[in-house]
Image (cartoon, rainbow, N blue to C red):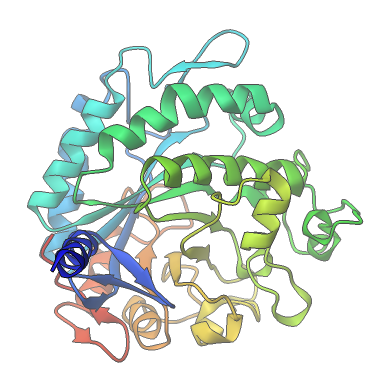
Length: 378
């Protein structure tokens, strides 16, 4: 009787949160598909902490409403970005808290509660490796200096995870967006996980050949471990810029594999629960490269974990309509699709009405043999 009771309790706990089996996400026993958008920022790097959310609230809430009203169920949101205003750094690059006003956790809690009330899951992306602004030295310090990284983990990350882990709308954590932007793709190493020469002609390092793979993978490993030790049911990823660095297919290498992350950071807990990758066509040819998710079924990558197409759009979509792209993701083994991006600033983005059309193309679907359930009750 006691064993039966404990098994029942365990089942209820799992059913109360998202969980992963094999290549798919499940919620309350049903396979689910994440249909949504990126809302990376309202004001780049200045959305969260230091009481800034009060000035962004209406926009964030509006996008939650629009996602729900157009048949979506999830949003990817950026938090620290390049350390502009959170976490709080001292003059030497050590982290002393979540933010100078200690408002970050309260703001994220309010947002997550609003999202839950509208049946929308939120994935929080902590850092951005795709740009190098005036505050990037703070992020660079965390990547290169293990002492500084420890201060972030102890004074900001763990407090965030402890405070937010029971929020039903918090679906997952994305450690860093496109680390490849600051990766040195020309480093030879006797350790295959740290040899990046396979990426030399790929375009990686577009913001500078700043960091070794070893440093970047340790950065991911330690944060993933801290999250998963603090909340064993947490789901963690890191968004690759292209599948080239996220698969062993056709001469490439999965830098994000359990093996490589543990080799870099030596913490067995610091692995990813699921993978997420981005894909855009070539600006000149308007064609996807041969590694794009829109050229493959998910199982061709040989990953053994769920894979979300976490950035894509129609304007850089290889002449495919936004509806076709969302539909392809649903029927080719992927766990989700998030268009880029709700704020729609910059040249490489769809306008928001286009993204809404994409979400509507999957509205109400529940094919348990393909993508899965869209209309999720949180």
